[in-house]
Amino acid sequence: MSGDHDLDLAVRLLAGTPTHEGRDLLTLRQWAVAAAEFGAVMTPDPVTVRVVERDDGLAVGLLARYRSRPAVVEVYVDTVARAERLVDERGWRHWFPAGSVRAAALAHEQAHAWLHHARVRADFKRALGHTALRVGRRRVYAHVAGADELAAHAYARAACGLGRSPLLLTEALAAAAYPESEK
Ligand SMILES: [Zn+2]
Image 1: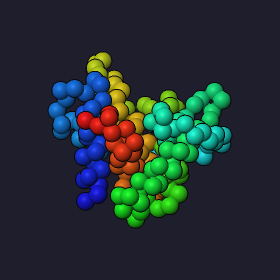
Image 2 (image 1 turned 90 degrees about the vertical axis):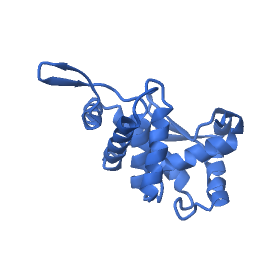
Image 3 (image 1 turned 90 degrees about the horizontal axis):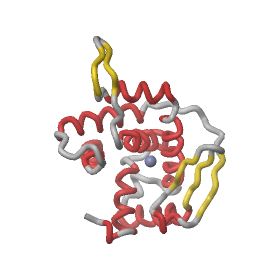
Image 4 (image 1 turned 120 degrees about the horizontal axis):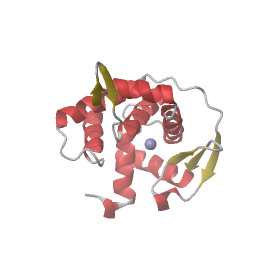
């Protein structure tokens, strides 16, 4: 049940991502399923990345952000606090236990870092199966815009044992914190 709702959100995210205008929903749905399945079973290396807390996330609309060189995850504590309040306001605590927003944000960024590895990237593209062209019998896979985001959410959900995808939370947060950007 909740899986279907998460899938609908995922398809909507892809549909709203540039380069996917006019794509048929079935293709987007297949990509969303493949990205979620790939993300849910990913096993990123335990990274020893430094976590830096910032308090200006609501201003820029971010929960967390991964930066390489040097590898650091910035956690926006003001957005995390807002998201935790939102969980209570919406009655979603059974899906997102206390403290899970920060944990999910960290897991999400860890997933992004993992998806940057060439081998993981290649595996992910193959799993998505978006063929850009064929060279003889060889298939050359293309990048699917937005798929990383879905895989990162699926990984965070699985890693943190959440009842729903954190995508639900980020969308609700965007609507609550930035109503002017609501479509
Ligand atoms: Zn992300």
